[in-house]
Length: 138
Image 1 (cartoon, rainbow, N blue to C red):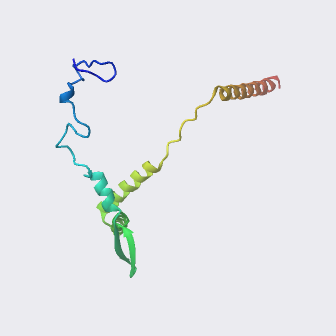
Image 2: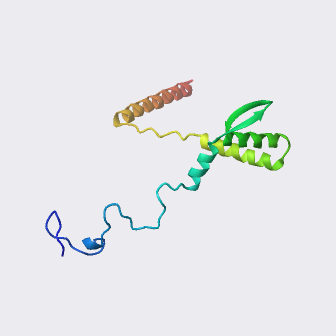
Image 3: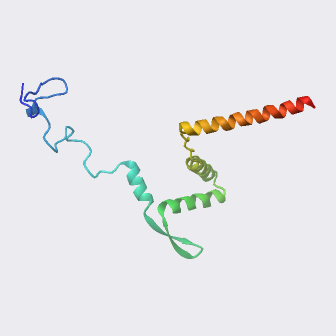
């Protein structure tokens, strides 16, 4: 047993290695892991597509992101009759529409709100019942 700061004892066992074998502050168990600052594919792709390029549209120079330029070129190819470009463009549009549809969050009602809604519901039921009774008596 080793000494612990809080109660004076430190039990060595599963999940509690001896103090001399524990990692030092700032030391990792995966020394050959991903170096700090290394970007993943999504980060590199996003950074690259946000870079600016100069394009020539109708004789005028225009600055766009690479993503905007690529989508413009894809749309132009689709309009000119390239079937594969049409398919890719349709897939992009469908994907963009699916992502833009926001799911409305469900509203949580308090107990007071539930009571009010139940009373309103009962009134509607009474009104409907009274209306049906009037129709039956005619």
